Length: 463
Image (tube, rainbow, N blue to C red; front, side, top):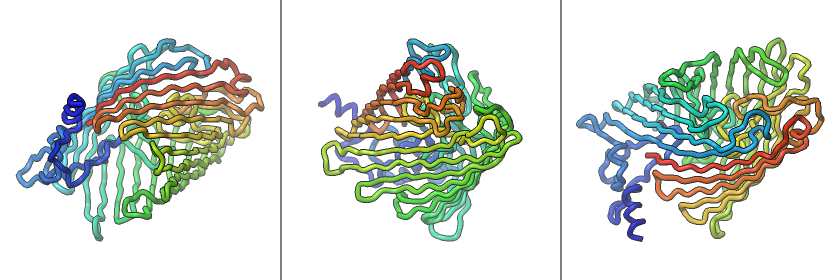
């Protein structure tokens, strides 16, 4: 007991007598969202070891200050029968190592400069390393903010220019791809304004193409632009509505029916919230535009609905995710109906991460329990079907895994997954996951059809 108390004091910084007037912000996967300005008041500090790094005054007034932080992650993954055993295989797994130091300079109320590096390595990755596995050293984020006051209480606008991560809504279509070893980032400009319960964002960016060596990342030829509006219904901003437009251009798009120039426009809306134990997150999206000489017409509807039994031991939460995502109805004509999720979150349908959100229908029931404040256990099943039998299936990055195969079979497979998480302190987290994806009739009709097995173990230190 004494050893655990000492460890808690070192890692979390709690003391018997210190109390914080304000709780610290949650640690975000986009670190620029964390605000530690409250530490300017000594009475608000708890004595945690990391607090002196989060508010380093550089002026007598305290208006100019520096925040330092970082993440280190060690993760082992073993995937047996990648793509159901088709193609070269990695038989003994691989190790991911990642470090991401950051610095955040606030020069008064109206100017901010943020920078973050990434150093990511993959050990024993076979048959070859991918750009999501390794980036020896590069600039992950580097941007400047200019903040402008607006009329009204707490109303302001911000213009941000430079390299930055983006993350919106449920990360179904714009994400920082946090799960894999190398995150997704963008070069460009973003502007956003907040006033009361309203927020509006607009941006024009190009994705950064991650390469394996030192400081060799560069902007690629694709373009992404958006207008994104959020209206919250409560002051805690836990219930609300999103409405958005997203434009996308790619000169080198690849789908089941071929390759060509893609220009795609997305119109979507999302409603989210919780009440009386229930929580919900429902999103619908329609896409139009052109692909080669044909027209694009694609769509998706997704939902995540759950109920938490707060009066039960371990506070179990039962939930059901359901998605339907359009696929192409005729690969021989020029028109395209395959939905494009653009830049979705990594490991979209679970830790095994084999199937991506294209031409798909799925049901995803989950039960999660929290035996204590530091432990959580979740078990899930995922059932996959092709939405259209004239289109193939794709991985999370949009690469074609299997063509349509001239088969009418729809069922792709059944996935079972167990994830155990231990979060003893704010700065330290352990996780283990095991998954199995059993091949269905469509996989058996189109090639190798071995069941896929996955194991991962992770330790992460973030401050």
